[in-house]
Image 1 (tube, rainbow, N blue to C red):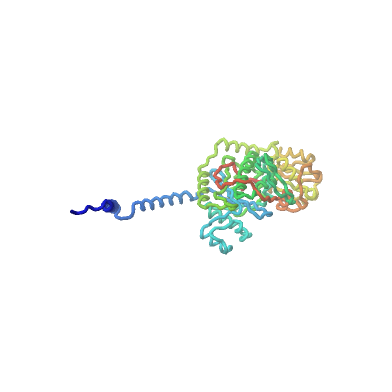
Image 2: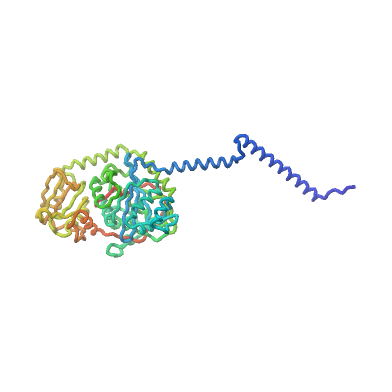
Length: 498
C-alpha cells in the first residue's frame, strides 16, 4: 500500500501549480494587450509612453507660448540708481505700453544671481573668464566697468524676454531730489533703523509713522537688516513706500514740471525715438501703474532670479498691459487737469516748471532759492548762472502767459514780471535773481558754494550738494520673492523733480 505524501509536500505542490497558473494568465493578458495595441497602432510601443510623450510635448508648447513676450507696443527701459558710497546700482525695469498707456515696474534685487543663455554667457566670458553657469550682477559691474549698464541691459533682456530699448542712470544724490518731489510721504516703520549721513554721522529713524523726505526715504531704500532675507525685505519696503509716493506724486497737477525735473537729473542712453517722460506722465494714473518685485528666491542673503518665472511674469504683464483700458472718467479728469494747467491765468506757479538763474553774482544764491522754493512745493527744473548783463539789481520773472507768476511776488516782492513768447530752455517760468533777493527766507537748505557759476549740469552738482547721499547698511526683515502683489507703483523712468 502506497504511503500518502506528507502534508508539507502536498502544500508546496499546490503552491507551485498555483504560481504556474498565475504566470500563464499574466502572459496571456500582456500578450493580448500588446497584440491589440499593435493591431491598432502598428507598433508595440507602450501606450503609456506614447501618452507621456504627447503630454510632455503639449506642455512644452504651452510653456513656450506663455513665456513669449509680446513686445509689439512695449517700450521697455531700465533705470539705474547708482550709489557711489556703496558702489551699488538699484535697478528697475519699466514696461510701458504705448497703446494703452499702462506702466509696469519691476524692481530687481541688488547683486542678483542670474543664469543666462549659453550665447550670452560666452560673451560675458570674453571679459569675465572665470564666469560660471550663473553670474552675479555685482561681479559683472566690477568686470565691465564703464560698459556695465550695456551688459546689464543684455542680461535683463536675456532672462526676461523683454526687448530693452534704452536706460537712464541717476546718481543717488539726484535720486533723493526725485524722492522730495512728493513733499514728504508717510511710512510706518515696524522697527527703528539707523543710517549714516553724508558727514558719516549715525542717524536713527524711530519706529512708528514717519514723514520721509528724500534723505530718509533713501535710507529706507538702502537699509539692510543682516537677516537671510534682507534683500527681499528691502524690496518689499521699497514697494510699499513707492506705492504711497506715486499716489502723492500723481495727485499733483504739475506732471510737466516733474517730467522736466526728471529729465534734467538723469543720463539717458539709447532712448531716442521713445515716448517722452512728459507724454508718459501726462495721462498716467495710479490704476495704470503697478510696481512689483522680479521673480526669484533668496537664501542666506543671496537673491537668485528665476529666468523661467521671470519670463512668465514679464509675458503676463505685457499681455495685461495690452488689454488694459483706462476708465473714461480717469482719463477725462486727467485731461481736465492738463487743460486747466495750460490755461494759466492766475493759477499757482506750482503747476509749472521753474528755472532759476543767479543774476546777482552771489555764490550759491540760486541753490539756496532752489532748496527753499522746492520746500514750498515749487518744481525747479534748472539752476544756472546768468552773466550776460552784469549783476541785476532787480529780480526778473519771465512767463509765457499773462497772469502767470503772480504768486512768486510773495517771495520776490520787488520783481518785474515779463510775458515772453517762449522759453527756449524748456521751462515754463524763469526767475533771474537780482541783488534785491539775496536774503533767502529761513528754512532754505543750501550747502553749495560752487553752484551756479557754471551751466546747466553744474547747477545739478550744486543742488546735489544740498542733498546728501546716504548709504545705510541694514534692512528690515521678512522678504519674499513673490512680487505678484500689485501696488500703485513707482515708475522710476517717469517721475522727477524736486
